[in-house]
Amino acid sequence: MKTVKLRSKRVIVATAATVVALGIGGAVWTSAAQADDVTGSERDRVGNAAVQAVGGGTALDVETEDDGSFEAEVRKADGTEVDVTLDKDLKVLTQTPDAPDAPDADDRVLTATERASAEKAAQDAVGGGTILDVEAGDNGSYEVEIRKTDNTEWDVELDAAFKVLTKTAD
Image (cartoon, rainbow, N blue to C red; front, top):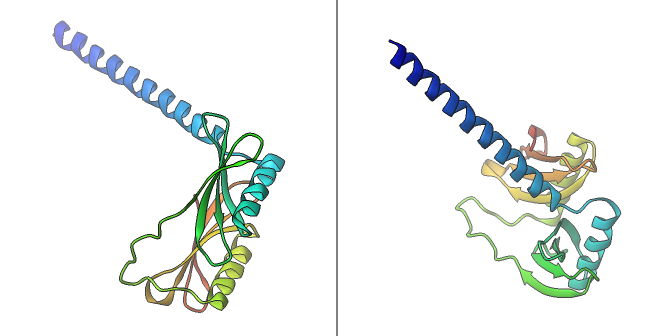
């Protein structure tokens, strides 16, 4: 009987130690991942340099790399996206166009009017923000990703008439 209790305690202690270790490891990983995001005036400075390098567009995401350089994702006016790597002095190191995703059976190209209407409906739904992505969904619907000024990201699903079906904070 004492052997069974002792084994049970060993299993419980070992399990608790594993859970704590994983929890701490997860917190460290999350903290490190968030530390790479560039915010505020530095994000604006780097994003503007990247946008200028590709000839216009919108900076979607700006991050620091381990070597101190920056990587910015820019969406150009034609909808294509370019990853721009800049050194600490904002000199362009590389520009790499994002490869288009393989089309799904229900993918369709949005018109400028559809895109503008979906963007406005999503911004109204969450109280403003920067549009990260707009895609056609199933059955004429639209899916919009948006980042608010507090860096929360939202997924907004709209029906064919641009009425909000769902909005979810990431």
